[in-house]
Length: 280
Length: 310
Image 1 (cartoon, helix red, strand yellow):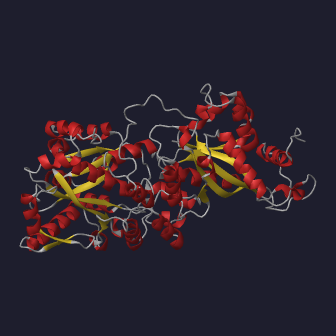
Image 2 (cartoon, each protein chain N blue to C red):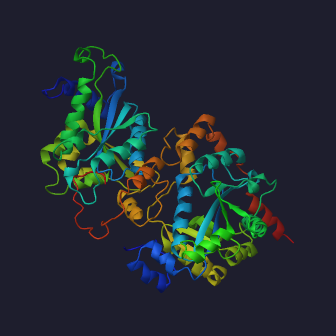
Image 3 (tube, each protein chain N blue to C red):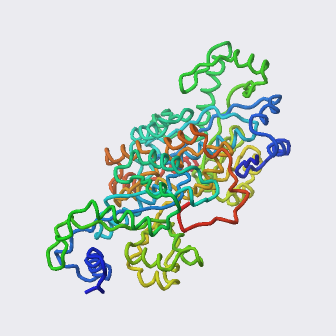
């Protein structure tokens, strides 16, 4: 039995997760897959094919475990109050993400974070979206301990999707609140996508809080090296170079139409890449 | 505005100095005295299947060549290899052609050519280059007298109109200097394959770099540079070999795509959506398809080894 928590859903969820993650024989009634929603926070300045790949790779990886069924992906662009250099207005970044996702049947963009009057820590965004999932889920009674859970009535698990470099940023002093890191890995979970040949495990083992919840950190490998950084995109655009095939055509058309990214100062100042641990 | 040429090898000081002060339009204005050479980029390969990386090669090469101020890239041609190439895992040409056409549907300058794939026997790359160069020369002769030049989008533009414009208003597009030149577009792997025994005829390699030219997109310029240095024929014609740095590591190889498909993994955003849908609809790649031509000798190896025998 798990240590009691104040939310019923966490109790059931924790028990289920620990049992399966430890490789313990899963009782037949627990074999129904756990629905998962992936949330990616970041500037998306602009959104690129690499961002979209993260979702695909993460979904494949979770499905391969046999435990999870990824039912939704959410892109949550950061608000303008983040004040990152060269950040174009959030309504543009949201619009571009929307265009990029036109052809996706499971990923959507959400503007709640960017609509807020101030910058939101990642954990708050997770909490918000988790609340939303609870609100739109069937009642809790079906999930009491002892009863056979009727699949797939379980509340989806919300996991933070990111590049493995985010794990590294957890080590940066004062970038993340300790309590937030704990909440992210304990209550929610991380799916980190890294490049083939890079092993982010050391980032986990180096930090006690991550090591403690490593069963809740999923490391997916992207075999195709595809480092389409938004920084590069912005620079290329400002120099009149082509970015076709690096981001969806509809996004490129939008950028041209609204004359975004025509000037770029990122090459001038590489020192202050202030990051809250989000994808660029 | 600082302007990067993505690692241009032979940056002439005039163009470089100007780039620091002026924007692109002014740069071309000052160059209008020297006429630009029209260039057609030709990419040969299996395209099994075509990926976003293949398409990027064209974009990178065009930006680069146009950026030299000496060239104007007017067309890109994708020429998928014929089935007679006998490469392991090569699926029928008509599928590969259709996928390439779907992939270039939204491009106004890159197109697919089926001539090579329609030949019964495998065709050496040098011959494909020659075929396309001759085709350009033939249509250039036809069009020299006031005939409209048909652009891919269907827009017609008269040569004479163009000449008038260039003299009247210091045109952004100077008069083209004669027949367009075909150049081979490739990745570093093709360049380095020149070293594989019996894969290429040495006279073909010479012809490719001497008569046509190579634009090679590389990740780590130094390997390609080393390869050129170590080859006498490539070294001799190095001014006709352009190495373009690909700053974004974009390793979307067709092999990895096929592997992902066999494993039920997503290839979305690695290939154009239409290509992904087509592959899925026709279930093109599997363990069975990967076994095609297993044990069969690759056509160039077969041919060059046979011809080498006395």
